[in-house]
Image (cartoon, rainbow, N blue to C red; front, side, top):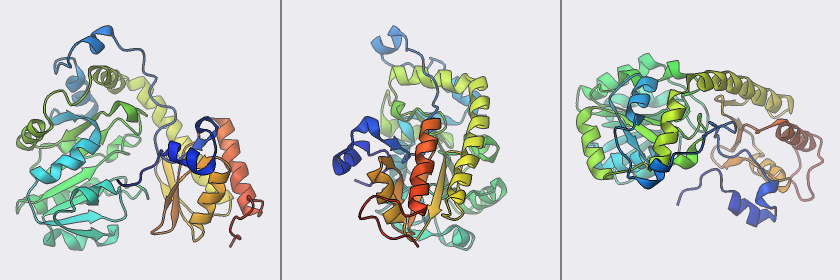
Length: 336
């Protein structure tokens, strides 16, 4: 099993801190998620039905009818390698670890963003995330569509994971769905803060969607999750307010990290990634104080999600100040 953020139970056991006493910044999930109301009794009592309005709400939100609801984009990440042909697979590196893991039966080449252009004509499948997780790298729509055309001309496929694009939807390729050789993955887990509902969408040509639906089987999403997802996708007022709020908080997090003397970070409205030679020691320092962030060994870096409230912001600021002034817990590594 690959490591992911949000492993609060393991952190509680490792550090002897109760789950409710942690400030969990490890996931990149919106801490101000969609305020889902109670679901109807019908959603609990009947099998999910595809005429419940979810597909229509998603089509309106994404700007395309070329979509298939799935149990979170993770379900598609695992299923697509069975359905998409091509032996030579290029995967952006670093990126969400489930992508290279899913394609491991093929000849996989890990490729940094700067080298992707040179790799297009020597690959059958290109897999990337935009914005990328964990570093926030973005790819212009025009460049992505050029790569899609070049790949599709010889039967290749571009797979774009847009899990973090909802805060800046103009960057999305959703409205281009249906083009040959283009697969776009979307999720309600990050921006909407509904990771536990396990709702995502695959935007792709009809033939691929049909094969994927056949592989995933009936009722991939529960009735209650479909009902909540439909409401969230249709709530344009909440979406607009949330985009403005996240933009401000993302900038605030970047400024806080910079003011702490840790250097310049990169990321999205939902997280910041900080490369630092003492990332492991800083991760340990924060964890001993009950603050959980995501640690990456290569390159040495940490990913910080957004605090949920002012108490959380103050707690993070104090912990970073303690690190900068050498007031960490006993055993912390010396500062550089």
